[in-house]
Length: 178
Image 1 (tube, rainbow, N blue to C red):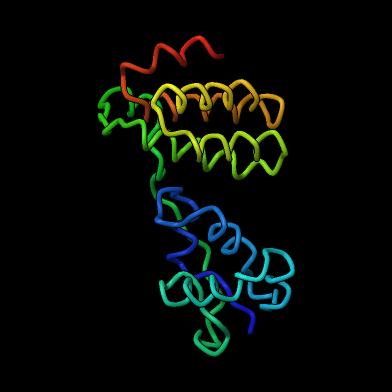
Image 2 (image 1 turned 45 degrees about the vertical axis):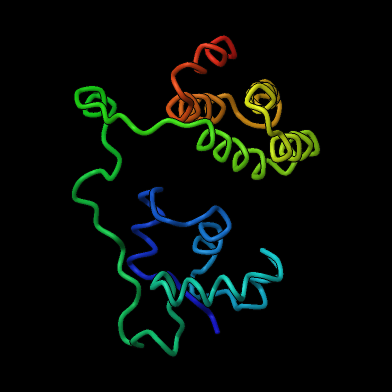
């Protein structure tokens, strides 16, 4: 079985707002109709087969048996950008609900993706942190370590998203970290 993406999957990958976690996104990217389940398992781990089944059930993947043989995957034509431009976003800002829990979950996800011992240690510390002050301290440490693990542009996007998720009263503690 060699799964491949559906139009729904292509749209979800472009939108970055679909209800998919990073592992599911990676799997979708790798599912090009050329790789077998065994190859996907060797690339992503033992749970790849279960994820393929979940994504098939969700309509993100099809197999050769499920898909019509005569229609190759069509490229997704974009008529308008899925992400609003900076000027459009600043003209009509959308106030999102801010919470320390959302910020914590976001930083946990960022640390988990880094695959570095320092990030893994911070991930564990943040998972185990219970007091508000301790959570804030570990998140600040993570933002200070992140530039050594990844690119500056990525760090800036992480800081920006974190500032959007943090409660306003905590933003000043993170503004100095740049």
